[in-house]
Length: 391
Image (tube, rainbow, N blue to C red; front, side):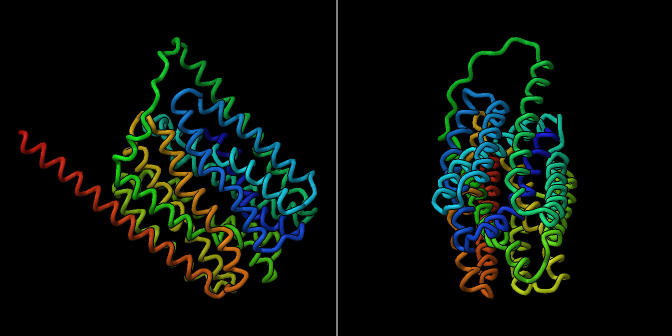
């Protein structure tokens, strides 16, 4: 699992800070870059749900993740070779996003199963993934400053191929460790069972608003820092600071969740996100940028680890992978796909107000997380009272 997450987040360590700047070097505007980034999220709203549902039922999720990683690598190489026309890139972004964005829910749901069986620590594996992010974002900054932005798609494709190899390697290791003949075919999972878990669905909605509040940051932060005169290596270091904070939280997340309720952490994280975006509205000073990047541990890592624990413990057992797909489709792909073009337009037309709008989105997440927490408490107390009466 460590190598899978290393490969996946090595690619993400180039995509998030340098994909926008590479597109910018090709001559695309901020609004067009927002459109291209959003286009990669649109198909996951569908493919994330469908592919993870099939993985719960008929297809081995590690092999499927490997196939999707290879396909994503080929798509990335096409970006490098085809002419830089907007609508050609939009179509390719849709294809790329439809496969690459599903690798994480497939891998993460497998990790959560191993975490529940105490075979691996979720927080430590995610921390290794975040370490890969910081490594490639830092080294990538120096590489692209020394040579050129044209290396961006090539480095991303290589990381995706590493992810595929790691998935197949783990699959072989698991097959060797479990020599018993395969059991009977799994029955078709009942996806409607998820609808009965209202607090889980509201918690996913809360996560979607917190993620939505990050769209401006993910799509325009690197460009904005570049406009203010920061070099590619400095931008890579800014992202590295954020991921160091993220690594620290993930490494401690299992211990924190041992005594703190997941939904309480989601509420706390959403408030921290709002504070972070308010701070970024005045982010000209290096000290403020670094402080805002340190808050990434609380605005992102805290809510993500908490939601993963909540899904692990509350989702029906036969649709664990599907629930993960729903989370990434509705709480990540949908808000990123819908809001990223809006974020790019907002940054281009009202830069002084853009981060305050993101802060409002984060606070909506606070309200939804509170509602989910109250619903969870009421259902728990209700079931306890019924059980008491039966005794």
